[in-house]
Image (cartoon, rainbow, N blue to C red; front, side, top):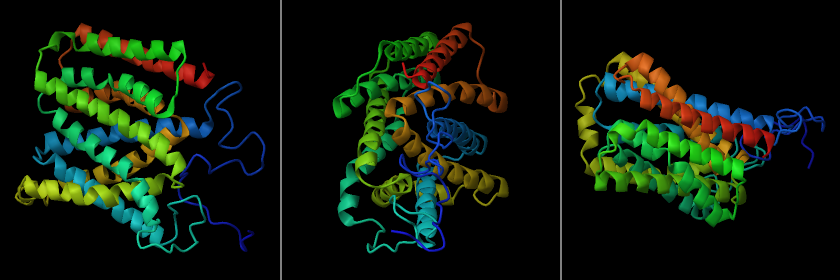
Length: 348
């Protein structure tokens, strides 16, 4: 149906269907990155945006939890979720964005801006996100940092497995080889810290499984629900927010946060503000990257950004002793991620 006065553009690209070239030629965002490439320009932009947001978010979270010694990671997660949901509400209420692929100016006939049946349909995604978030936070406690990084990088194997079982997606030998190189490099990097802790190992592997399920669920539900990236984030907030609030209340984290001595420090508040902004952008780019590319590509981007996270974190925060074996392992992981990126771009 034609619209008088032209269409209103959304603030950000929101789905795998939007943002196509206006002229119908090959110069749009859905054009190949370069001639013969299997990755589009939008896909490359989504991957790079995710890695940039992820690295910056880690730095700000590190500043809050380590530099200021804030004791309640769950409260930061809750604050990020509340700010994200409130921002989405304001943007949708102002008709600047839409939660579906329709025109933002079209009024919604639902109390939650999305039909209740769609909210129920996305519940598995929201529950997967909640389990992923809780398992990821708990997995840090029982394992030292080098071993934690080592075990978390094996997420790509779980993601590949979940993609096969949920979407029957198969991968080429070069892709499988790049994954194997990443996992091998991860264990080389943590070889000096292979101290066995059954409970710690079990929790980390549960975190890996929930991460893989979450990413694969995004890829499956995101394309079939009719919601764009903002809509999926909105449903996540509605379902998970009350659960996280209840958890932080039961654990006493809210009381600890109110008694934190630097709570009203301008520096600490600035760190929390940027953390919330980056968390919103990170969640958006996770959906955007996973829907445009694949769950495995999203997992690979997570490994690739670790190279920059470790480097920037070492410069800003220190505390990382030099170890040749760790450097070799990190290099192998970076090489494997680069090989995957090359295969993905070339379509191999």
